[in-house]
Image (cartoon, rainbow, N blue to C red; front, top):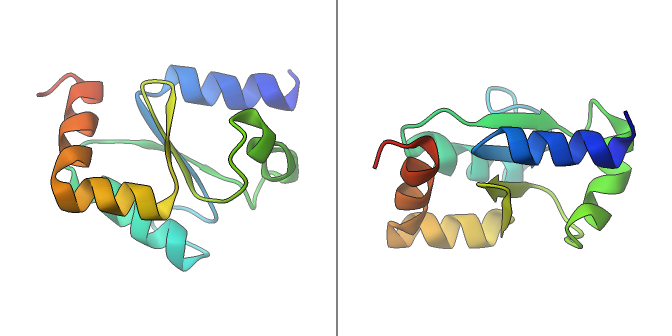
Length: 106
């Protein structure tokens, strides 16, 4: 399977997925850490892809959705954004609603 297909599969098969540096338990970047913490605070499970563990994903994810930085959060197959946008949505209470709707627990 080609790398773009693998990225697409991860986005489409998971209601909420974060492409991040490291893992939610052991983040390798402050932005990834804050974003994963905001998702975890929403109280629903979410998938993650460690872009540092897969150089092909690291190199190609920016062109998948034309978003140059990490982390990248996708909800219901749609790019939400990176750390700043995710944190802003969380602070407004919107991220929690989006995550709960994606998980089917609203």
